[in-house]
Length: 295
Image (tube, rainbow, N blue to C red; front, side):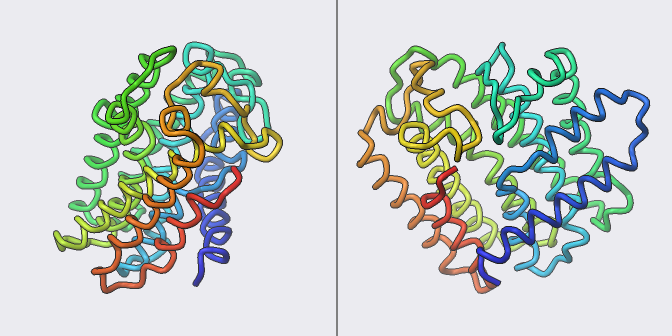
């Protein structure tokens, strides 16, 4: 299946699974439950779940098992966006074309919604009905906690806050984004592989190399879109990085060089897949998508 068909299929699948899982939770804290559903189900590319499904199915795992893993990664991504949008961080009012969670539900509820979504990710991974082996669960929890925490996404967010109104060198910017954006993309690919009980070191290494380059391509193109994108298409405020005087690839390289670098990263990602014998068409096409999207 090509990415054009697979992407909406994967998005529909994980959306349906997440909605059903949320619906099974009690509604005692109704406002919190509503804010969690709002942040988790309100659109989005579902890029990380797609990577879980594409990698895991290529290596032989069933979609029913991968549902839990894909939803867990998306919960972490959703919680990070809730907190990232808050006044204490980027103070964004728009996300996916709708009011951000703190605007709609209040800051206190938004904080709790993010906390609860983070916890829900690990609830999903450790759910006894998932069909994952005990060994796989341990590995998945380890990967996600590292890539989402201090050594990954949260550490990258801290570096991002410290970088406001500062000029970063290229290596500093790359480190920041390898943590803030790249870490969770790497987690999605590796978790798909480990959920399929892949233990071949060369395959895992090449998949991680692929994810690292794809994550960088994704972030560089995000920086490009922040300059040239349309708010109505992107679903978030265009120019938000510029307003905070953040260092970006276009600000350091110029817009055309940044575009060229993004394309180079996408090619490197595809090249990393060359030695993997399993079907990786969707993963390869995802690398191209990273640098062709308008939002």
